[in-house]
Image (cartoon, rainbow, N blue to C red; front, side, top):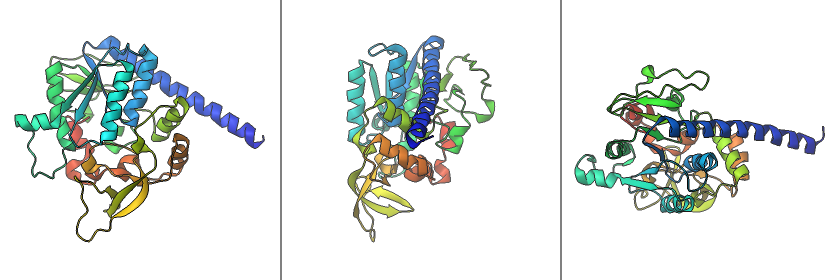
Length: 310
């Protein structure tokens, strides 16, 4: 085989793989619509939720997605992401519901230990309040098993009790794509249609489908400081500390979330194709390389999920 033939073969194999993942995701999205009365799709404006939204558009058609989009806003999200969230929801004609951690703080259901504490972990409270407000019985999320160890324990249809808690040892079997969706009053499911995707799959799909993303995902200049092995963006919420050297570097975000706990990585990748190449050589997971709040046992993902986190 010559180099061109090898490339064409690899591309066909890649497309077959992405087709299979897309087909599974569309099946799950339709299954949720059929099995539940009040589902919602968690939509942050990040790459994983945009991939899910693309699959939902293929499953149902633009303007026909049969469940609202829900975003839990910490009030400290990157404006590029929230602006893109609003644009994409409007473009698709989808209903967008936004609930804020700041509103939970005003109600007294969220209390920060100190003003500078990250609000990220407190999204669980606001999420559970939104579930109670709208009586959602299924929440579709963009978590993937390759992200983190606790994520790998999740079923695609993850049962939550009446307190919104996840019990990893009490999850239901999932054989031959048969899902037990029975619920008792007050219970709900978290559903993860792209569980079986990897970060590489996501970027290959973004490249293939030409999915538009917030600009933060691609290379740009940003002031950062090095802290505990991470590049911390210098912002009003995350200022530099005494003795730290502020540098302007070429960076991009592998994942986007609350400004207070999300870090970029050094990169010159300007396109999805560039990022595919970078991802092939990455030896640290995206959360491991970019999330400050995953570095402490107190904020471990498994504990947070047991408390009702995404």
